[in-house]
Image (cartoon, rainbow, N blue to C red):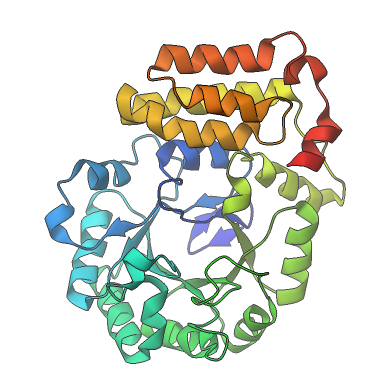
Length: 337
């Protein structure tokens, strides 16, 4: 797929997720079939540029291109500076967050709260596009800020007129948070109104659902977030289904173990051992969801403070007699997940 001048493996995108889409996760998703992965959001507050968290989020060493970095904020000048800072740090695409519904983001009028102020949206987009004229700018937003105010079509037009090169739309409003089901009619309407690429997002959990959303909306690609947590192989499953119409078998427990081990190694190297162990806990929980004995294992594993203990517990869980690796029940895993 040609996307903003970059040749992508396919039209499958990893959604930016705070605390999840760090460099190790992005790299793994790309290895397992994603065409592009967007970073977790980076603050536009220049006072935080030197913080350890922001420095890590701006670290793209060895990452498969193109490198897309999401920025968040509500002040046009600060957002412009954040765009320039991240381009200087290696970003090849700047994505703007107007989709996050989290209170700590929306309470400072950033994220999806911005959709209530279309004039400010235009100022931010124009400032960012103008600040990085040689770098494509994309925008992620929702269908509206409430079910009574679905203004995604207006935001999409503003984005296109401001020079934004592509948009991603989550099929829920800000008020919906992540409750209920995503709807795709609004995304289809937006696709009919603009000429820039439109990426559909929300509740895409299976290969069949990905195909349905692409067909229903006419979108140029799909963006997957929560469904890939602990299931990064979902991208290769969707890729294969879209190409062949056939479903790949769910991964055996042995492969899940191998992928998880690789992911953990990257997390420890990226964050350091102390923070890496803490970050790894949620990922281990996601990977083992639906496997035999996983609940007891997760509870015990969350108490372990060191890399060595965490790895030993993970290996024991997968390799123990009668454990998921011995059972090797692919169908059970697929249904449970």
